[in-house]
Image 1 (cartoon, rainbow, N blue to C red):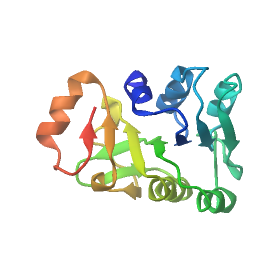
Image 2: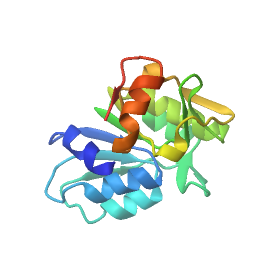
Image 3: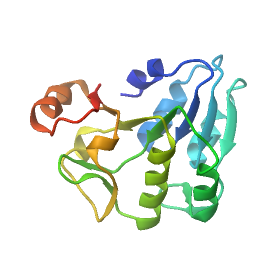
Length: 170
């Protein structure tokens, strides 16, 4: 799935990368000779991108949410208000056709929501085990997402069974 994301970006883009294992794989596939500005609240993604000399890497500091290895809280939210990224690659634990994007933590949901609101385009990587699941805290509706990236064998399923919004399934 991560390999589908990289061609969407162009040299010089400003990318906001949320945490998560799928997003970490996206970071691993970023070519070392490509110039991007990347903002992230993810410790693993920061560690991965240290060896990318053309990436202008910016860490969103705040309260550490240890289970996800990301930062949350007011400092992250305030920094997000000062940037207008071209893309957000959002980590999500659950995606449901009616309930949209959800996650198990309220504070993390608020940061994810702010990430979507600040970005021009949004990308969600959704493994099949995340499909048709929902948690307590709403992040966004499917109508607020631009791209859902999933396994090849799930593309037709989403296109045929989920509500039609402006998102593209890749």
